Length: 374
Image (tube, rainbow, N blue to C red; front, side, top):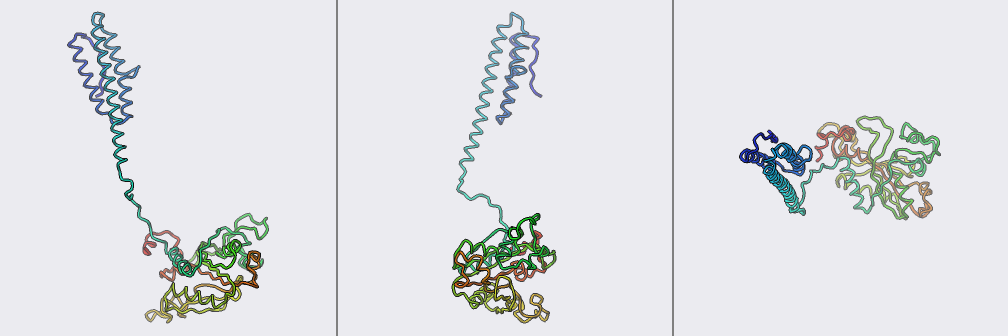
């Protein structure tokens, strides 16, 4: 129970001694409970506040209420109590501040050069891991990495890559356009890039030949969600430009890359195809690295290669001279230089590599699925 100042009926020295002893005991007890500066402020106000402090009440209930013949003795005793309270309050403040200082010094004595507690990091996502492996193969061949914006203009995504205005890929059924762009000229309209090829044009605008780059990144197409399609996926494209680059350079480069990725035993095959920005164009197939090219797995048909023994990996070809015309002023004269380009879907390769049967599993964030690839 908190101490309260009693009214004195007996002002004799004996009665005053007993009252003073109780007050001193209460002062010592409450002082011992002060541990922080906030506690100390409350303690100080309780004993020394002008309106309702203990000292004020002692002065009112003891000194002012005392008979005239006792006022001198009571006054001396009240002064002694006041000095005792003030000394106790000051001592307690010094104790609290000293404890806080000691705590700070103790903390400062910690060896800050010691390694801290590190949170465990997660593993690479299987798609990113596959992408890094592919990029690493081409970096070892002397290629550098180039990046560009995900939101592109029609000019960089289509026009500068030799897509004519009526090409089906420009249709909204295939491409995700940014809204309210109809009032702009066609080449200035914004869209989510459908491939990483715009980075090739942007890089050629900045750098003169010779040039060798790989372009990893995220792309978007207006595809419905299913086990093999996603409106967002990842690509890696490559571009090499120099004098006297031939189709043989393209085939040799990609054959080496496929062996580095899938094993030295795989074979490569090129099948004629068509892409607006390359001429001639081809699709690259590798012998199935799952069934060894036999088309069967333990007497069962091999699903990844559809029993053919071959898996289509990427599209490629020699850069169409019309593409160089857009950057001709930066040293890309199609009469003097040539180049090849290629592009592959990273997510599809990750599906083949890890035996996943649904591309959506890569993007659903299910830790139980992802932790299998740690």
